[in-house]
Image 1 (cartoon, rainbow, N blue to C red):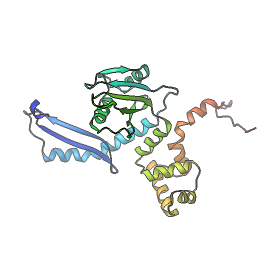
Image 2 (image 1 turned 180 degrees about the vertical axis):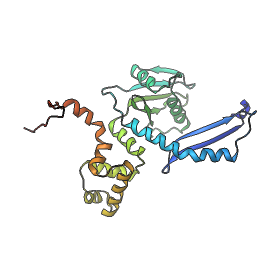
Image 3 (image 1 turned 60 degrees about the vertical axis):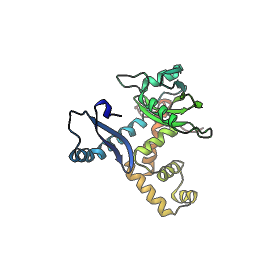
Image 4 (image 1 turned 90 degrees about the vertical axis):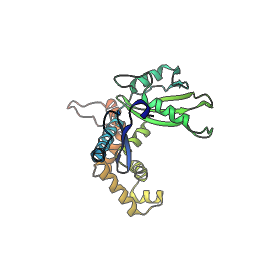
Length: 258
């Protein structure tokens, strides 16, 4: 696609950390420049892991950002040429949050999801394609489907603020936690002991202990209490603080059950 436009040279790389891809880059040069060399590829390869770790770290903090409550989901319908055929007021606000300082008509993540959805074979039993996108005001989840099948290329996309369980999953993923470790972290948050978790997941207690140790190392904590506070309570503590009266000394007042 690029050669006819006078851009015959390209170099690509994926930003991978702990076996997971967090981004990619595509570098192109016009025909009056020299082609990329093995040294160019080696130089790019030498920094991909560091870039991946930087992206992963930034996503970790974005996933912890609080969002406003009560925001209704929005709907946007794109035509075959990605022109906006229908948009609701909540969708306008959410699309604005996703745009860069030099905004395009439709944000890139929306266009990419629409293109992906059009490329898939129609399946009425398949759930809508979904992706979560970080923004300066919190994460936004997009759900895309073909309202008229694959015939005319129209795509309907529902946009909504990412719910707490989803942001928790993103936060764990950004720490490099595996699917099994995420499952164990959730059970720890429910107060289960290692033997309880072993019984629930049909694992040996030693295997559970290894997973818990990995969770501590990946999230940088040394106890279950720290793990739960870092991963789960970020969503709740600010709200609790708003509802808890302060003492005269500036601390939180102790509350007693009746």
